[in-house]
Length: 316
Figure 1 (cartoon, rainbow, N blue to C red):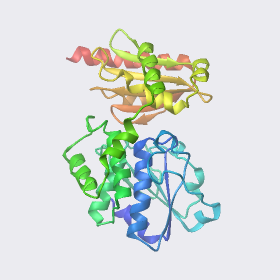
Figure 2: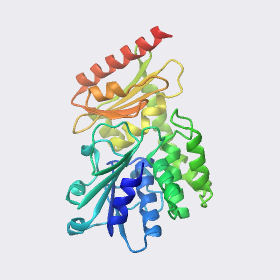
Figure 3: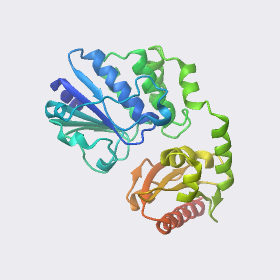
Figure 4: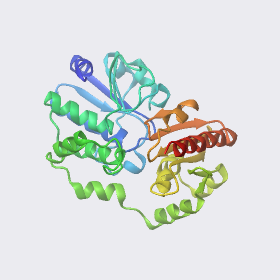
């Protein structure tokens, strides 16, 4: 599966690694992990990681992005990670590269790069990078392993989500054998300030449920201004306060932004991806996202999710 991507990597002396904007643990972990794997495995190559800031994942080693001049792209390979759509890629200069490659675990929505390895059966893009490293005998340092392990943990929900398989644990074992400081990973991911705990409590109070079990939270611009948090911290960070609630089968977190309403869709046992795709988004069967233009369209999405939950209930 990785042969075309590895062929591109071997062919270029300069590799610039991109991922989606507002990175989560998997996007940043796969980016930093691959950067160090390639630097350690191909000492003659120049390898860079670019994009917007690490945000709440800044605790990860080497998470500060490199500054790369435009002219470096002329003879470089741009590798795109953890991204299913062109408009999500952080730093548009990937289009200026001499060649492109992509590694992604989202549902396929269209070709982006010349060489691609796309496999939605993986729990994470980090898992794919770890698998590629194993298959080709690439050097994986403790730093690279910790980066990849962090992304595997976040995208698998601490190995609880349905995408977690026997392969996930084999890859996790491969990484931990490289010297991952497990305590440091858990501290970085799950230590919270008292203010953040209270914020989560506020969002628990905001949960509403439709007649057929679709949970939702809606945060408008006025409230966002008062919270003093980034759009990503609220949209992605608060969606799973609705997880593990028995009465809720599917859930969505709506967050008003300057560009529209961010929609983070999740599910325990129903594929919500078709709803996300209907509204211009995508992702995974049980974890997807989209951006809609206003609250009216967001409520239309909620109606579709309620209908989806009702249909699933009728089949039981």
